[in-house]
Length: 305
Image (cartoon, rainbow, N blue to C red; front, side, top):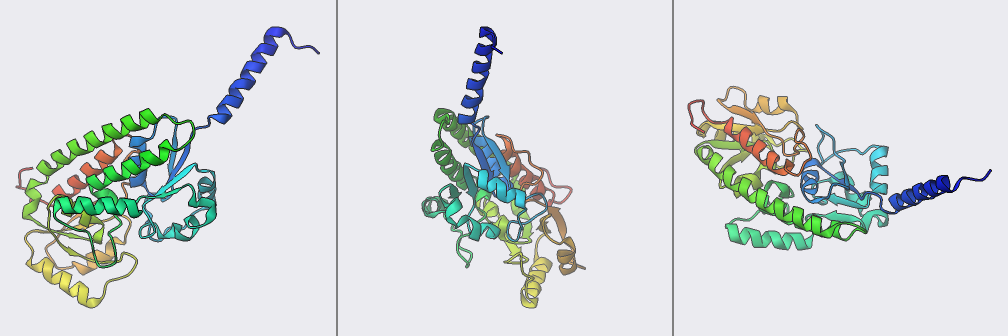
């Protein structure tokens, strides 16, 4: 049967659109953890698909991937992760040839050199004895460096709008630094209290904003601290000024409650993995403000803030 000319034209046109659509498929981006996804969401254009591997309530230190997530990695155009000291469950997989040419570690050598320059300008370092602290996204200036690396990697993909990526990066820089100034004002009252954290994830945020972190319950969240370390932390809590322990939803709540039993300690929960934050262009700033909210809950009730 012959196809009428008009119908044939429409069919050919539809076929051309399908082929064109296949050739210009949306770039597929996989991020290891939600905070990285927040930064990617600020830089990526609307036609880019972004997903994150570690789900709410899980830790990137010991997560076990599902087969569907392995397939997502296989289909990704680019994979962003912090690096081998953070998402340890990805170390062996991403080191293989299958993924090495489309994987971007945000704590690579070039990024670390930029971090050292940042530390010189702020008068403090981040060496905690076991190498660099991998929680780089908690420092807004380092988040901007991460965004620049993300922009560079996305710009290298075929068919992307490089100008739009550059524009998004500039907007991200401006908004992050505006938020940074606002946060410094909000945190002013918190310099008068003693802050303690479950593990060292909070250190970068505290250092950036000039807050003293008086103690950390465990240096490795995968291991229980020794009796001597617990005793030292308990002594610091007893001698502290309005001590506040910043806990995290990913870890056992009963464990730190047993350590602080019979001590006058305020508890506040913050989430370094940004579980409840929506992945939007403003998501990273919302995340930073959520940390401030958690810190301010530590203040005595009669404190103005």
